[in-house]
Image (cartoon, rainbow, N blue to C red; front, side, top):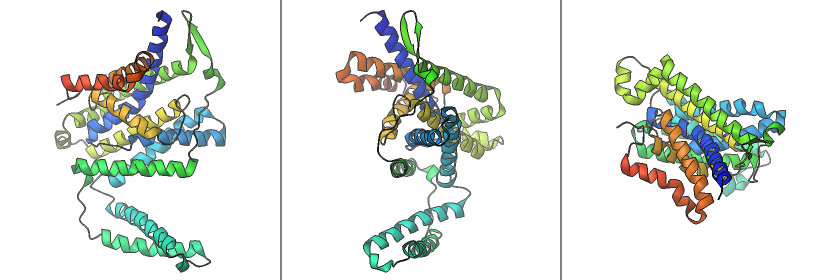
Length: 347
């Protein structure tokens, strides 16, 4: 093992950590601000990659796929947060959405069990049946007192993991189960030579992108009024509300930002990880490891945690392939033993 080996492995670990920073920083902010255990965060990563593939196939532009996929997934995350992870507001729309989903399932179940009830005009009768079931479910759900999900961690876990499976199945139905790759522009497929070591230019781009986004997030959090509101909400949400900060809008902004960053990571990571069903549940534990090491709500902690996980993963696979899974989570176990709140987490 010469010097070149260590340089290459360190570079690969840092570039992988740059990708983990994108998905981990958003999850860390959601944890820190909203105290929501979002187990569907990996699905945002997966959908970002799939939507980017669709944009590339339609327009031929890889550069355009970055903002389009990230913004589309941010809107999906925002709708999920507003409708299902908040207790106040949009009650009628929330109840109607749930009733519609249950009504469609009932209509499909009836048509599968008793196909003779559906005649020649299949879609017309199925639509009518679904509408009747939806109205019946809406009347039922409107009379049920639902405990707010944002006050119960168990309900958050069950709801978000349910959405994770829904997102995964939807991706499978829309894009199929084949492994796909996002092909970056030809310029990024080359390598640069630094001190006799060939470094893939695309991985350099990943590191530069993560650094640029990290600096932009730091400037927003430290130098703007919105950033001050976010920091106040992380420290003490109840006190922040007491001094007039609209924590509801802060939560909405942070959740959309977290989904945006995860989707951006999916587009960037799709060039060397690929995009395939199950990738979301592979990335989710890594994102949580980043948050646990760095601490909830800390961008600096997310950067340190992502770097630690990226280096541990790469060097573990290179030096100890038999126990690489252990070496990947060894930093997390060590931090939990020394400082359970993470390196930069608050009590």
